[in-house]
Length: 126
Image (cartoon, rainbow, N blue to C red; front, side, top):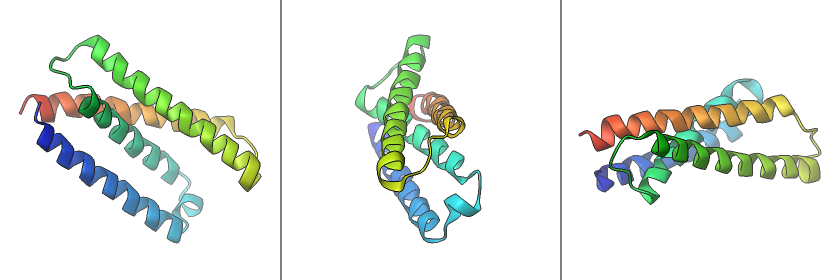
């Protein structure tokens, strides 16, 4: 595994996510583009999946490694959703939307799945 390459990609991706989130908040993309939240959760899941590989280096492509990454992304996504629900109920006074929560977790996992594929194709094999 090339940690320098992975580190560069992690830094680039987190700055990209922060920039897009900043623009989205300034231009109200979360409210005007109905699917924008899904894109951001996908990118976040992808980043969290790559962070897992950075923290816990993997040398081989195994089913248990894939499950560990997806479980890591799942638990981070659940934690984020709990934070979002608490924030919306206490501060923003928005009602809980279970469909949005399940959609967010699905896209977190989809991004994590892409991170697994990307890691083994681009970081390990090259």
